[in-house]
Length: 300
Image (cartoon, rainbow, N blue to C red):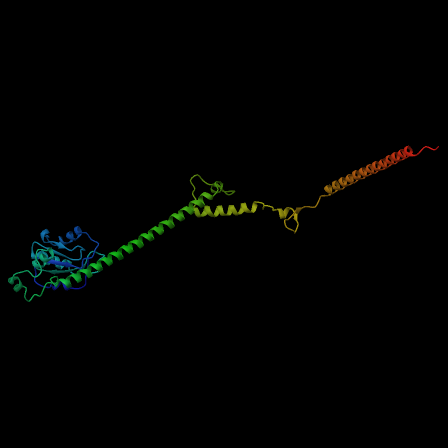
């Protein structure tokens, strides 16, 4: 509980009774917590306790007037619960006011003696005209609803922030696992030349990361770069490209020998064809001569 700096608790309104009216209650709180707070300064009569549906104000009956006075001194101008933006207002009230809210006393009903006894004190705060009282109750109920909605929206924002933080943590953990899985086993246990790892020696993760990074750099320098076709062959400028190479001296000599062999073979075949053609011409000439002798007439 947070007390207020105002000393208004020294000036109660109205006649001192054993019934107090507690206003400016704001949830969240339970009925058990409220009764526990009220029982700290006296004994609450259960039949004389009443609270509205939205828990904004209540009437409390104590077994004695001294307990009611002690309760007002202890709670008036106090912030309860801690989340309450307003200070509690505790004032004394009459039994008729409590009976009216409990439904025992109908508005306007009462004896002339009761009416005469209340002259000079003014009407109780809650015994206002029904329309104004309903309007005030509706306004207070609407304010409570708005506070509840704002509280729900704040909880929703907190929950969303918590979920985003959880997803970010999970994503970071998954990336870390992927990096760990991608590391090669021999990189983890590899020891530099001249270093030996003791049985109980331990190194910091940052030192191991730096060592593995340097080793990867050295491995990349030692590995020969892969050769491409453009490095191994000449290629034509036209598309599609044709890759080619110059012949070696031995390949050039072999190509010339094969070319001379092919030329000799072609020359031999040409001579054979010419001889065959000459033989065919002579044969045809002989046949023609023979046929001519056969067809010549005999002389008489």
